[in-house]
Structure formats: structure tokens, C-alpha cells
Length: 253
Image (cartoon, rainbow, N blue to C red; front, side):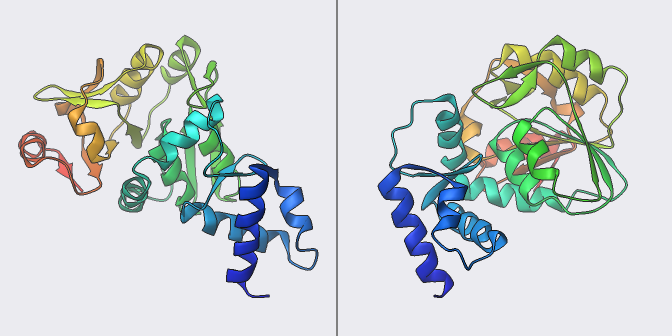
């Protein structure tokens, strides 16, 4: 049985059962390795034919009601743009660096493409930490604090206090929106102070932003224009915004 036939069976099985564990999918193919099955699931997920979840898979058409499903919905929104942003941002990762990786579905895409080079990664993103744990040369520190069940990230005062004594070579941060002439914003109050401190302690701040965020304002500006080094986009940011941030000395990729 070739890969295409096997993946078609997996997709049909997931569509019929809506929510299945990896063990049940693996049992369909007793003579196929776990690694191959995982590659099949990743291929189907990248093609938006199934939804990868921790420990298994769900059908795209399944009813989305839980916080996990809400996160999955955000992951699928502008998915191609987020992957392109992650591909561009990956080129900014240098070996032997201390890197902050923020929360969000775009930073998670970056974690998936993260090079297996010697780096020290600090993150608030649970999914990013799990993804990077498979990289032998990447050391990971997960900040402590309250877990936001909608975004699978840590925020709050404990995480902010931990950052006080840290310094980052580079920080990758997603955003909720952009205030023209001011900077980049989040809509999460619990995240605001933490993000401010991360920007203050980073030698290089990189904003990961798909074009859908350009029309949003967010609420709390955590990264003024003069604190940002790069904006990595999907290539569809409004020209007016590109000109404005470029005039502030920011490189737009």
C-alpha cells in the first residue's frame, strides 16, 4: 500500500469517527512504523484534511466547542500565511542564541520549523515547548504562571517576574493588531506586562504578523515602533503600513 492510499484510509477513518487517538490510527496499519504514521498525520494536517490534536486527530468537520477546538480554529485561520511567516522567521534563528518564543498559532508554526541547532529557548507556549522537546540540541525553559486554556500559554505576574532577570538575543512575538504610528498590540490584559518586559530585554524583537491583523488595533501597545527590529509578514500587509514601519527603521520581511 502506498502513502496516498494509506492517507486516504486515515482521513476516511477520522472523518467517520470525528475524534480518534493515535493508537487507534496506528492499529489500522500493524506493519507500518509509528514514525511513518506520524508523517502521514502531519501531511494530512498540513493539507487541512484532518486536525492534529495532542494524542490523535479530529475531523475538520467536527463540531468545535472546547477551548482546544477554539485554538485549532485559530490555527487553521490564514494557515498558509502563518506557515510562510514561519519559513521567513526561521532564517533569523542563529545558533548559540538565547531565544524567546511567544505564544500563538504563528509562533507554533515557527516551532515546527525550528532548526536543530544549539539554542536556549524560553517560552510561554505549551505547544511550542512540546514541539521543541524533540530537538536534541535545543534547551527549553518553560515560564511559570497561570495557564490560559484558550491559547495554551502561560501568562500573569509570575511569568513577568521570571523575565525580570533574563536577557534574550532575539524574541519572536505574535500580535493582535497594530496602532498606526505607535506600535504593536495585544488584546490580552494578562499578557500585556509580560510582553512589555520581553521587548525591553530583547536585543532584537521580531513581530510575526499576518495581514489579517493589520486591520485590527488590539488594546494594549506592548511594542512601540522604536523597539522592533523586524516585522515578518505573509507579504500582504497594506503598503501604507509597510512604509510607516520601514520609515521607523524596521525591516519588513
